Amino acid sequence: MPRASRRKGDAARRHADTVRFVLFEARPAGLLLQQLVRASALSEHQVRSGLAALKDEAASKGWPPLIWTRAEGYQLGAERAALEAYERQVVSEKLTQFRRFITGTVAPHAAAHPGDKWVRHIVAQLNSIESTLDLIASA
Image 1 (cartoon, helix red, strand yellow):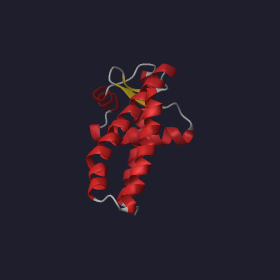
Image 2: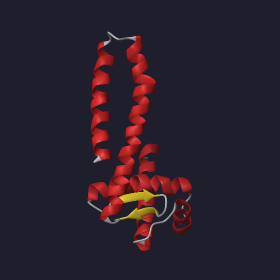
Image 3: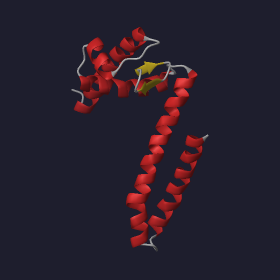
Image 4: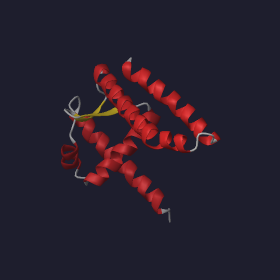
């Protein structure tokens, strides 16, 4: 008998197929989470699991990307402008998370242990990542 994690993976793939079918039928419009739950007859947890699996599967199979916007919900194969806006939003969100991590955790660690090799290394690397994300977000 397969392990529980394996069964969960198989279930997530089945949910991904259901979610993909429902989103494909709704194209070019998107569906909000609750609309997706109703249209797929899956639970909210199953839909979220299916969405996560669908993102991985779409990337590996070269399918159109899955994006989410507040106005349209989840969409498959959006227009170029929508894809770019989504990418910028995600990069901006990650930049904010990195900055909070640096200022809230890493900077106090560096101040408390200025000679620590690990903290010097992580500060240098995170500053590089922050700079790169800032360039992408502002481009």
